Image: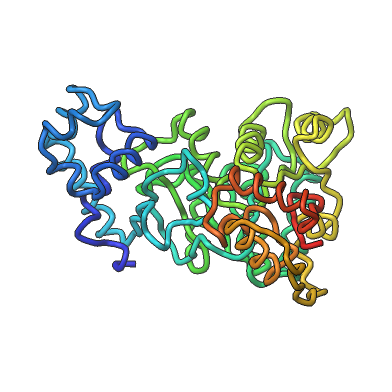
Length: 371
């Protein structure tokens, strides 16, 4: 893990400690200045020219206190053998790079990479029922028997979250917990053993430095990472309100597939899931076959490569999409975006053009194939 600590790490950590610099502004500073260390060494007159930078913010950047805090955090990272993963690093989760509000820095404890070929986030109520836990466990078991290259993500909370992690451990599936606090603690404390058991093949992930407590707002911020890391978010149970519905909403904004387990209209733990399905914000979760069909993950039939129609006029981007689908169809739009390094929102326009030219065909669940 020490390979993730570089001579730039101190400044990467410091960037997250500047009061008033959020994800957007930090990315903008990196884009304009070009180097995390240089941000702190840039002359004041140059920083004044950057849009959105006030005199107060420049004083914050130049404050020795920022680097002092960063030095303390770097010492904590080194002492506890953590990974400090900046958003420009090749190991940074590719799926998160397509999320405009993704963290610029992640702290990681464990051995799992975050770029598995298939990633599923499982979320749900903290007051899970026996039915919800059994469905969660069966779903993870079915995934484990069907795929060897899959990662389960959740939030280590009570209820469905901890059920998903424990099921993954039971069936030999790597699992990652995204935390709403620093890595100097485990919350809830009763899940410490599970968290430790996850580290061999999984990981604990957070954007929060040590000393950060599990405040309510931090869980909302945490949810965007749970959504952004995955190809699909599965809501096993949810009441009419709660973090699971927030995660589902974020996942939809990231063009991720959202699935929900239906329940009886009289079941309080199913109100949120039923509402997601009824409002077309989630796909009805029935069984593993339905899930894999929607995701385009059934690899049993490998299509023969298709030849582009003679004299068919494609733009350079359209040609790249055609060639990618020719190698890996059918493919989910998120995986296609990662493969081509094109934002999902931009890719949809290209896919629409190709659909109008009868080159590609959309399938259920955000999956595309060649005609």
